[in-house]
Length: 268
Image (cartoon, rainbow, N blue to C red; front, top):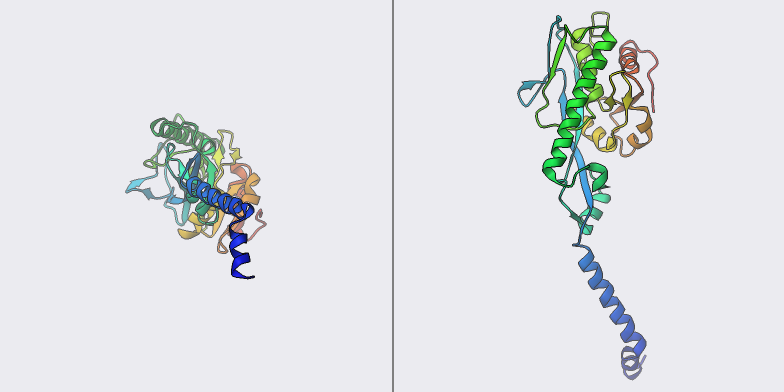
């Protein structure tokens, strides 16, 4: 194309319109990239052995019954999230979206309150209720009276309901083990998640793909989880981690006993 024709092409109304549209799109993207959005970013958090200590304090303090000396670990797992009032930009959210070690969720599915103080109150209340349910479920399983056996849980500032299953298993292991003189863990490092009701029902919690990463990072080789979350748990699953789905506390105990004896263990 000659210089004259090129000059005419570049100065044509169509070319100028396309250039203007391109500039507008670029500007719009530039602005959008930094606009705060109602999304929360989450990533693998800490884990804690409920049979041991967390932040230098025993997780479980049980009185009113003789306790066992346990081996192995039962680790509850957490996810960490940006604050309830934090609005992450489109650019930051997209970065997290493509990072297997992070997840992006609508803020209102993570926090019931947009005010950080109120959100923390809700999370703390959920943990308190989870501790009560875990104690009740474990004592019911062991046919022990809550009037004689008292359980105190201390997990520092960890909140939410998802430690329920592991707390209940920890109480059972400290009081009765596998029922045959051995440990529920079989000496292994076992992690898990799941809410628990007083009747022993294990419920879903969310964030499992991040929790499996935290569990594997801290040495777990087995991960107990609610049955309904098997599909989610397979996303970015660490190769060293074995998934064991359960629906009740009784099923959890049975699965751990089967792991020790080489019996049939549920799988996702």
